[in-house]
Structures are given as C-alpha cells and as structure tokens.
Length: 361
Image (cartoon, rainbow, N blue to C red; front, side):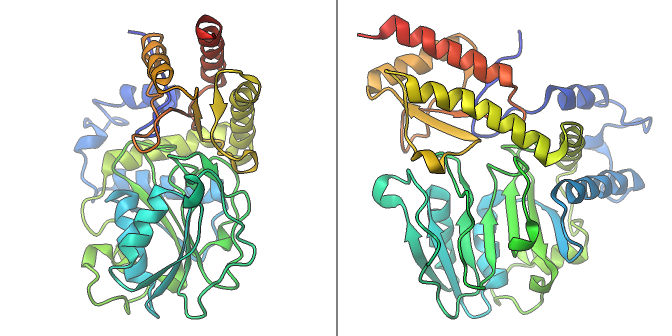
C-alpha cells in the first residue's frame, strides 16, 4: 500500500528519510549486531546516540549553557504535575488558559499549591489568544505557565506574555522545533515529541539550571524531581532508548532542512496554502482569529455536521487520514507538522475544492 497523507495531531507523520534510515538499521545498528531496541542504555553505543541527540538539539535551538536538556517519559501530561512540584517554592503558579491542555495543567497544579487562572479564552471556545501585555501577575507567583500552541483549537502565542519578571514555563508539544525560539526567555520549555519530533514515549524538558534543586515539594516522587534526572543525565532508570534514537535522527534531518529558520519558511508556505483556501472558500471556514492562527494545527468546519462527517469519510477514502476534529470541538483539523510535505497540503486543498464543487447547494 502506498503511503497516505497523515494529518493526525499525534502520533503524527515522521520524515520518510528518517523512517527509511531506521528501517535499514533495524536488525543491526552500525555493525553492533543488535537493533537499537535491544541495546543497553548503559553502553557506549547509547551514550553516543543520546549525546549526539542533545548536542544537535542544542545547536538547533541555540540552547544556552546554563540550561539542561532532559529526555524523559510520562508525556507532557506528567509535566503538569512535575512543574508545580519542582517550581512551587512559594506555592503559587499563574496559568494562562488557552485550551484543554493548559486547563488540565492548571487543574493539576491546584493539587499542589495555589494555581491562579490569570487569563482565559474559554469564553469563545478557545478560538483566540487573550491580550497578555498587562496581566494580573501574582506578586508571589513562582512562575507563569502557557501552552504555547493549542493542538485542539489551532491557536498560537505569536508574542510571549509579559510575565513582569516571573519565570515563564511553556508546554510546546505541538510547535516544538517548528520555528526559531529564544530559549533564554523561558525558565522551562517542555513537550511530548509525538507531534513534531519522534514516536510517542519521550518528553523533552529544557530547564534553566538554577531551577534544578533539592528543595522541591515533599510529595514529589523521586522520578519527578528534575534534579534526579539531571544528575543522572536522563539515565536514572531505563530511558525510552528507541524513541530518543528516532528523535536524534529527526534533529539531523532538521539541520539538513536549514535548521529552524529553514523549517519555519517551509511551515509558513504550507500553512498559507491551506489558510488562503479557507479564507476564500464558500463551504469551508477556519475557526480561529486570524492573528492567532497556528502553523501546525488548522481546524476548519463546513457549518453542517453531516457535511463535516461526509467530508471526513470521503477524505479518508482518498488517502487523507485523521482529519476528524478533536471530539471536544468536532469539525475537521489538519495537523501539518514539520514532516508534512508541501505536496500533502496542496493535495488536500485540491480535494477540498473538488468536494466543495460536488456538494455546493
């Protein structure tokens, strides 16, 4: 069967070049006689894999020397607890709630301290990013938290919030490595890799070293202490070896694309094709305020639930997979992460035009 165009929000499409390399090395990784899935994480072979992966990520993001890179497990969801457990020195976190995942993080943090919702876009179904230029930041807040790109609703912070000197924590799961970023503006950047970087099972945490400490909340499990993981170089226990290996290959692939500047240009060109069509279509329309649109996740609707369902059915039959919107919002969503080729978006738009011509009243 031919490869389909996979528009899933995650686990998502990976670069074909990476998949082919991994397939070629599946039975015997670089002459060791074993698959990467079979090698011990305590061997020089894996030391090199994780070491190169970290260095390539540092190169791509220009990560300052005073930040640690951790390759962890538990997904972004586990970080909803790890962040307050490790950072709530005063017992206070301020949250900007722009979607389901930020809301879940806020609710989770409330179990460990005082979690304040200081801004929200829930009043309009999370279809915009609120003005964050002058927020009611709590004087004793340990950090301000955002989900930078909202996978379900298709919004993106184009300007980081004014935290008034407080540390910024960002869940970047669905925009990780999609464009250049100034790491020094953040205290913690974290994200699950299964959308833009690799297979499910790895979460990457980039954290400023002064925040890695022993005096965390007493309830913090050993495994969730950033210091535990940092001191062990992400090898406190058996890490997701194969997942890290694939992430490392994707980092090298990104370097070949011109780094984050190159992939940003690629992503902007893809998104423009789809958004331009949505803006001119008489059947389909986007659901997000234009200035807050994500380059990664593009939700759209016809305005008729039965027509939406028909579109998803016919698109799937035509090889455009996983276009059904999240169950909480319905409609459709095209996730066009780094590895989605421009040809995939062009083919989707051509199909949408045919569908519109066929079913327009």
